[in-house]
Length: 114
Length: 109
Image 1 (tube, rainbow over the protein chains, first blue to last red):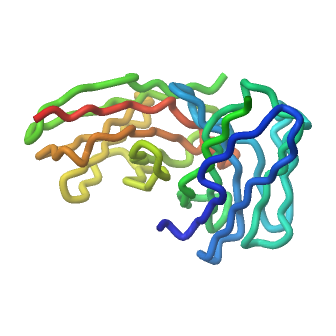
Image 2 (cartoon, rainbow over the protein chains, first blue to last red):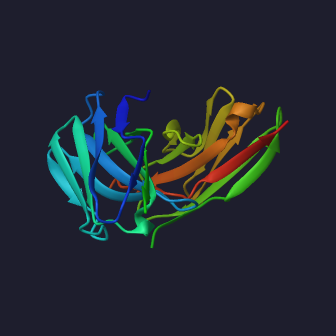
């Protein structure tokens, strides 16, 4: 247990479904992140929330929608996904975006789109 | 563009020493991180280098040369549990983490 909890661990969804991924951190961090991890590729930053500010990667399709109701919780809402969206989705948190702070990761949600 | 290069896969023997290299080209530099990720688990922090030189932490050491854009992670007295992927990441001038694709390390008895 790293202090960052993601649910569900595994998710299989059809292309017409709507689902949400949840991330919760109990570390007192004030920045949270969504990453996509595909096999043999670098981690792809999707979204960042830092001190209530959302920083968005412009290359993320609109079928992914983040929500950060407070500094401890982060959601990723999914709708009309494509098979190429199948990947491991990792949530991370950090004390702040700057300086030398590393990230604490959750164990991820393994998403399969069928 | 920004780029982090590390070998895709390496194999080593239990009890031996292995060095995993990482080269980077980024817009600015605010530190280099190494993470370990076992299959199906969260990446976990191993080391952080911001100044040139060697940082030692038990069986693991990490080296940085900023002038060469180069780092390595050195693992000594390898154990079977060290089989994992090792991720190199650099914080750029905007404090954004740029990630390598990871090195899968296979330990054989």
